[in-house]
Length: 370
Image 1 (cartoon, rainbow, N blue to C red):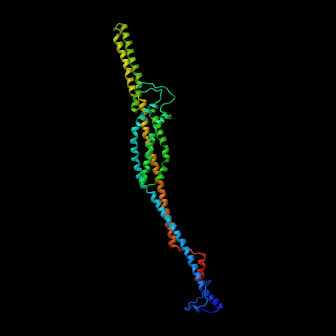
Image 2 (image 1 turned 60 degrees about the vertical axis):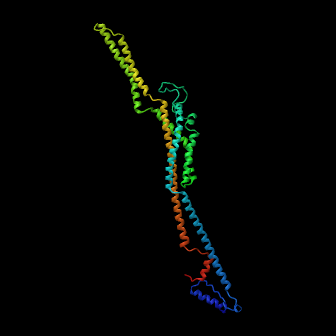
């Protein structure tokens, strides 16, 4: 305890400033054991300074700790989302399961589609046309291969077919959830495919049906059909020419007296020759003429098969697009976690917390200026 005057305190402060303290704090404390002999000192001021330091430092520590906990929660949340997002290999396994689901679905659909395909073939071969059996159908305003009528679309797409195809998509979503993938994103990705299944199937059948009706039968069958179509006219003309030549020649010889005139046998055999020359190519031509109904049925079958293949490819394209999005999101999530971990280390492990202005002012008075 210094019982000096105030001037002595100012002189001591000046010595401290000379030693390097900018604005020194001078405190006088009386710590004698006898409390009654103690004089008024600056202990209360020292207590206020220490309390201010503790309070300011504690608030900073709590703030920094709170920020650290919040950052850790963000990192944990990002890890949880990455884990829920799954791996791209899981989507590869899902594609394999989809192929099995689609195969079983087609096995269930094919027997039930046989009668609608036959009815549709009779519907679209074109009334007013003559089939291979020579029967002419009643005339209407519809052309062959037209699938725009309500009857055609009903035969090709009904509630039974729609239910089977949508059930396949639902089983795919269940398989995804069984593999640990989230169901809602996959359901949203397949929503457009659900709406386009009917359009895909009808468009494929339409194109295949028109292609089949434009080129009915096998190419050998079409070549033979054209060949015997020519023979139907060429062979009877050739036979008639041969008979006519023999008729004129024998008539001339009979008139010259060199031989007798032709009799009934020649006439009968000539008619038989001309008849066979026409009948044989005609029968072969008719035999090779493809049935429009069978041609339409073949085109419908090919169109349905191609439509189902397109529908399956469309689902696989959606899965592939989903896998690419998953890969991009996983990459962004990993980069985000790395940035957060780096920020956490830099802000809380390597860099000391910033002090408040009050604490800085107190330390500037208590420490030697650097």
